[in-house]
Image (cartoon, one colour):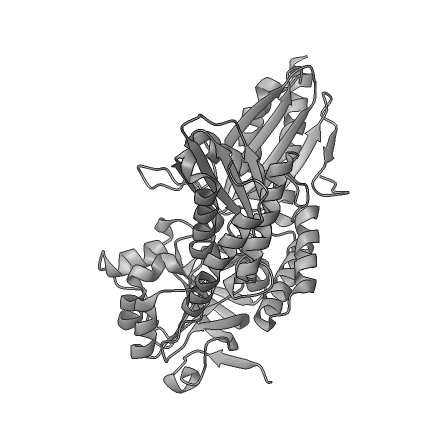
Length: 301
Length: 204
């Protein structure tokens, strides 16, 4: 029994190390589709130069099996685990081991720097890193794991603020536009903008990141939220920030809003941004560790 | 239009007529330096182990693979956000005589003034396109200050037609991103008004 468990944990680790490799080498299908669409629509000559470079980079990265961007970020995972998933108590350690392995084998850039000593661990693990957000799904025995690469350039525009309810939507919209026209320009646009709205800053911040996990093109199921997403997308695109911030037809890949009920006296808003090189991937594993990569059609690990 | 290729050592005449928005390529010596190298040179007073006069600087933290013979292979090497170096770049240009600074996104007024005064330019390489960049690196000549970590170390590279590089600050001190920012901000107020009036949901 013990031997069998060891073999399974090794298999699980190997799968996730390969999943991380896929995550940093290839963009998910929805991002590739959106970039292709925006590149066809681009009319600015400098914008076209940028999209051409992006296209070349994506194809070279796949061909040479190398991270498409040198900043392989801080590794973050959102785990939606069935309460009956038999390997639940192994997931944290398996993810950590997979990060160590992928760092050596792909290789990834070592990015985990300790806050107080400034020491880079050299292996992408450190205090509380890789970061894991947990959600337990009752009465299921499978697991969904989102991998997300939080690069430095596109983490820099991140911000959160608590508004008074009377400042309302207007305050939030201005806040988003101010952040994108200042910090957003240098964060490798076209950006995916995640907006979290809630009663406190921490909830809004978490939701702003959750928003980036949703596939591009899928709207918020709430009609008013979906309407806001569309208005913000159209408005930010009308700024004409273009690829690389050099001017062009579009500024964003999209705007995703996620909301939680707020306190009567507060309206918290948070913004997370993903660069055009939006590296996220989603894998589902069943109780027997059979896998399916949902973000990259046909991907074999 | 023919491809403009700058070769190190770059002199004033090579870059004086370039204007913001022009596209160039680089062949020769390219050295990476970002936050920690700027700090060590200019705040901690350590001299660089080699001269950068007439050379090119890249704001980047690459992924390098060390090979059994002690050399390195460039895996991925896209540019990092240049604005982080704004506080020290003018002094860096003045001190080293570097002629071409490459990064991602724009730089500020201090760097633009230094480009004009010391005859240097800032260019962007398309952000994120790190494998594309790596394929233009012919050789890693040396690494110094590796104690700063792989991303922060001083990597000296031999590159061939490294680009496309888009001039974002020219020797006249013109600043492409500052101009763009003014344009984006000028549009902003009107667009926000449209977003708010068009919305069916005025109070969240």
